[in-house]
Length: 56
Image 1 (spheres, rainbow, N blue to C red):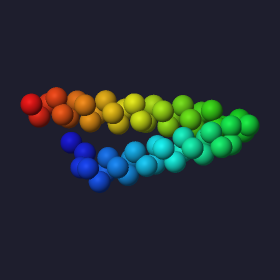
Image 2 (image 1 turned 90 degrees about the vertical axis):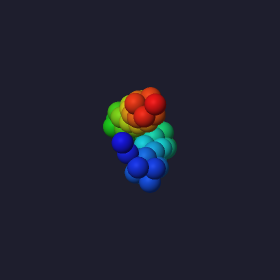
Image 3 (image 1 turned 90 degrees about the horizontal axis):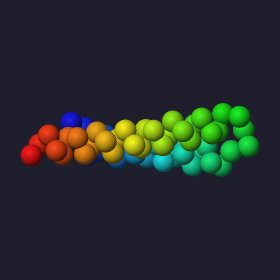
Image 4 (image 1 turned 180 degrees about the vertical axis):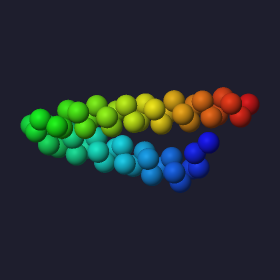
């Protein structure tokens, strides 16, 4: 299980990289950065939900 601080740091990294990808969306690598960021956010949400269900 990830600690609360680790979860917030990972959430911040994903959000900043998503913002950077959107800001430079005319570059060739920016859509891939946004895709990785969204997948990271979805994975983080899935891990958190799984951990909450496993505790109960």
